[in-house]
Image (cartoon, rainbow, N blue to C red):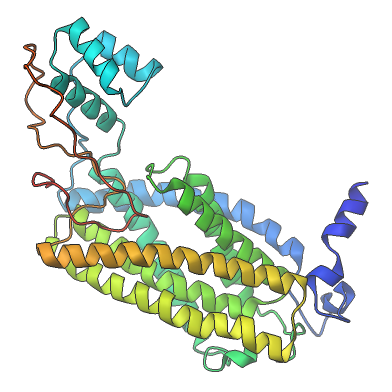
Length: 387
């Protein structure tokens, strides 16, 4: 039964163009082609990358952060209260108005003070600026390395300058050692991000980022198995470019270099929008949808590959809208504020004041200003005390 499932999954009529078989793409002394079993290497390599990340963050990023006077202290801790702690851990971290009123009567605290306690208690579980800086520095370093490697490799290829070269003599295009390394390292990095997303700073766009990583892994895997690696290298390099600028802008923000942060964010926004709304559809999608159709012709996995690219493009549209919105708001206000995905919740109230035990006559008019999470991109502040 297992062999039958494998035969069905690796059906040549799904993965390969008409009249091409897996036997045609077996490695020989004269030629080397991508093999599906090569991808198994990505899992142990992803573990290695994760271990390198832990070493890097502790022994390189953290000393750099401390040298920049980034403190490891987290947000202010909520004062101990057994009743509120029990509600927080066992019932809800976001009590509704009815529960707030009940707790107010039980503790003889006003509603606003209880809201502040829950806000501070939630913030206790959020990472410090030091942790966020170390995470961004790791991603910046890796993305800079792999983007530099990709540029150095691609400038020697024919398909960087003429995308039709991605399809000539397809799928009998040989796999070089440099291309194999580029692919496996990129795939391993995204696998490591898939694993670490569950332990990293929790973002409000967790689901969207999970979908993004999943689509990227499928794209890299698909393009490797059916030897669409030439166009795959173009996709990977194009995406790494903007990620370098994003992490650099975050690091500047955490270091309180506001002018540098603003500059990097504006450059990032321009690069992101141009690359993913201009270059990606006009250059990448044009060659995968039209040039490949003309030279090779469609087949089942071709449709799946292009569907994944279109999913990626839909995410580009969503993020570009948010980035443009943020950039306009930042320019109008004169600066870019914190990374809203990981910021501490803000309030118009003084966070340092202790809870008051006298109840006001009208506590229902007092609220909490929330934050909007948007894929880790820097956002303009939404309240006057977000500094």
